[in-house]
Length: 348
Image 1 (cartoon, rainbow, N blue to C red):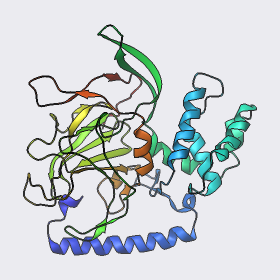
Image 2 (cartoon, one colour):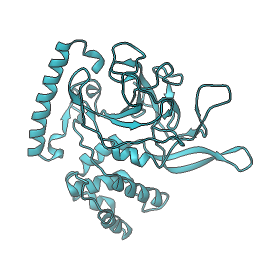
Image 3 (cartoon, rainbow, N blue to C red):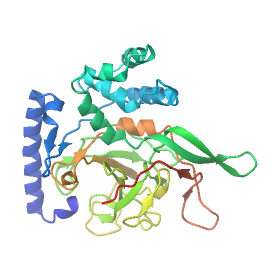
Image 4 (cartoon, helix red, strand yellow):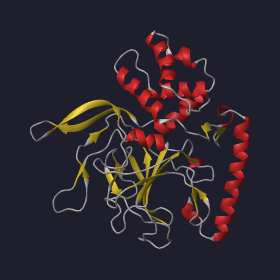
């Protein structure tokens, strides 16, 4: 959307509108629980979520994922999305006081044979949180096939179930970060930081978090060289910015299909310039963000939904993609190919 703001006048109008909308939304939300304000209808009369405050902590993500994977293939298998939605419904969507014992109370009921519907049926906000968390995490866990070493210098394909989304930083490369979502930014106009920065070395391979298709690629004065990838279910838009000067990405073009774990670009410090291929960022880092899209009207609008992905970044650190660079070449590639047989590509 920022590409559309061409003048200082447009910046001023944009900032005024954002401030007004933010104040009105904040007051409205404080007076009403999220499930009563977060849904509206599109022009066809279909309900869709218009607001998500994602603050699930890392421990809750990790605990729920462990139970999901541990019960897979059994009668007690329960999706981590259901578990997270149960927890959110019980705690009003706030995870600051989460303890693993909170989840155990739910899983103990499931282990005793209590149907999940008996638990969720008593939780008024469950449908909202279940749909919201499906929007955030829907492509992260499932069945997939991935290569591994066979011990004899070759590779075999192993079928697995579990976390199939990857850290945006390749295996073997270090980074530092902190929860910077909402921090102030001033280039162009004063605004909030709607993503997550991972400080690292220039040239570090950047990885596709989830499979999808390239929706935009090229220069943006705010993000420098950047790539935008849309998940196949169209609910998540991943934004990777400040990529390396001169050689920012690896054969990217609009419409290209990418697979989770694939090398898509290289960490850099470009951006904050209307002129292309300029390093105006002081510290080399990857900015990556996640926008939620429950209706296409939200894609480029003042009411865009960007969420805090600090806890998600920490979770994804458990799953890093190994890369290599063939001798004599400048590009990096993933070492182990992955296949997702159950993916359905949604046509326009």
